[in-house]
Structures are given as structure tokens and as C-alpha cells.
Amino acid sequence: MRPATQLPWRRAGLLPVLLGSAVLLCSCVGMGAGEKPELNVPGVSFNINGQGSQPEQVGTGVQLLVLFTVLSVAPAVLLLMTAFTRIVIVLSLARTALGTQQLPPNQVVTGLGMLLTFFVMAPVFNDINENALQPYLAGRLAQPEAITRGLEPLRGFMFKQTRPADIALFMQLAKTTQPSTLEDIPLSSLLPAFVISELKTAFQMGFLIFIPFLVIDLVVTSTLLSLGMMFLPPMLVSLPLKLLLFVMADGWSLLVESLVKSF
Image (cartoon, rainbow, N blue to C red; front, side, top):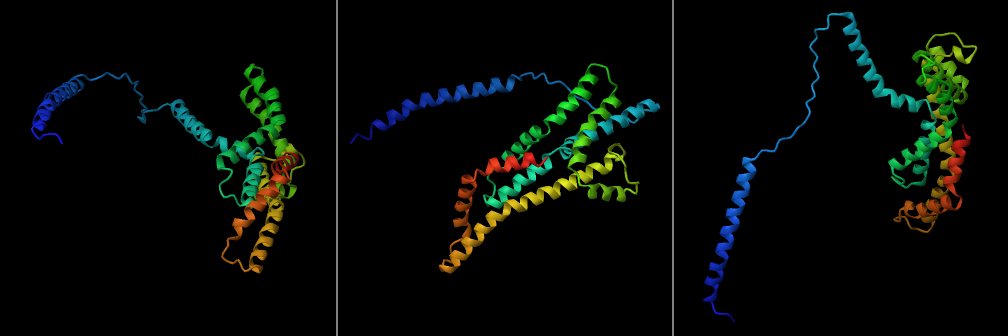
């Protein structure tokens, strides 16, 4: 056991160290407070003064407002004009039928849907690039004509996948005469008819996907009830069986093949 007389010497030895640390800290704080670093941040200003008296100035402002509005909704509209709607709904319904909750995650389902959309729409995009985009970039086409040519392949794709009854429905709601050719169908009627047809087709495919997994759920539930295992969740038993069936049947390949061939 060490004598108690050594404790004051230790305290006396620590005192200079503590004082030196305090002085150094105060000096650093003083230097930090005295020196203000300069940050060169570019300024951005946006003024709306309401002094545009010329019609050209007012027209330019309205055009910019319309342009920003179109750019904000353009991605959603473009996705609705492609195969993305049917693909992502069928993939989501397949995940629900398996009962895996959030597996695969929404990011994976959306990413796979985008990749399959580009794969299915590749001929249409190539047609737009060759007949509309490249001639416009080369200066051989004006902007209105390039837009018209670019919409033609999309109109053909949507018309091919749309049921005639859905087109007739929206033509009737718009109170227009029945068209005789594809060019006579306005885009305002063709696009919602195409979306409705895609939703109907996606739900039909989802129903067919649900059938085998629903049979497994019914068999597992009835078996557990007959065995008196009422407190065992049926999902705990049916989920591994559904995953096993899906993997053994090569479910992802069958699902993707069915989706691609449906267009």
C-alpha cells in the first residue's frame, strides 16, 4: 500500500499540464474567432417584377411556365405510353402472390420493370431515333415535324396493344365520330384507352399468377386445421412451399418470358 503523502505530489505534477492545455485551447478559440474564412458562393437571383408591358415579354413568361409544367409531368406521361405500366403491375402482383411482403424491394421491382420496358420498346425507340431524332439534330426536320414523326411509332405501339372497345369508349366520351384509320384517333383518346387496356391486361395476368399460390394456401390451411394446429400461422408453412414451387418452376424466367411475349 502506497503512502498517502505521494498524492499531493501527483496532483502538483498534473497542475502544469492542465494549465498548459487550457491556455492552448483558449488561444485556438481566439484564433478561430478572429479569423473568418471567406467562402466564394455564387449568388442566384430570380425576380418577378410584373413590369412586362410588351406582349412578347408576357408571351415568353407564359411559354416558360408551360415548359416547366410540361417538364414536371413529362416523365409520367412518357412511362404511360410504354410497356412499363403492365410490367411493373404484374411484377408487383407476383410479389404479393408469393407473400414475401417487401421482397424484392420496390427499387428492384421498379428497376427490373424499367429494364424490361427498354427491352420491349427497343424497336420503337430505334424507329424514333432514326426517323425523328437524328434528322432533327442534323437540321433536316423542323421541330413540329420531328415531334409528329416521333409520335407515330408510339401511336402504332399503343394502338396495337389497345382494345377496340376502350378506344370506342373514349371516343364516345369525347363525343367524336368513330375513326376509320389510326391517324384519325386523337392522342387525347388513344392514351387513356391504352392505359385502361394495360391495367386490364395486367390484372388478368396477375389473376393467373395468383391461382397456384392460392391453392397452396388453401391446402396448407386445411391441413393445419385437420391436425388441430390452429395456433400455427399458415403463412409460416405456406411461404417456404410457395418459394420452393416458384424456384423449381423457374418462375422468374417464365414470368419475364410471358411479359415480353404479351406485347
